[in-house]
Image (cartoon, rainbow, N blue to C red):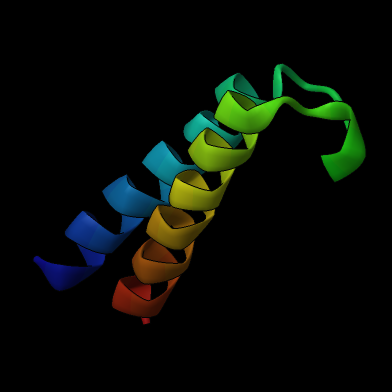
Length: 53
C-alpha cells in the first residue's frame, strides 16, 4: 500500500513539474507562480520517491 501511494505521489509530482514549468528549462526564466508550483511539486516528488522506498 505504501509503495502504491508513493508511486502516485511520485507521478503527481512529475506532472506538476511539467505543468508548472510549462516545459521551459531554467529557474531564471520562470515567474513567481511557476517557481512556487515547481517547488511544491518537487517536494511531493521527493516524498513519493521516499515512500516507494
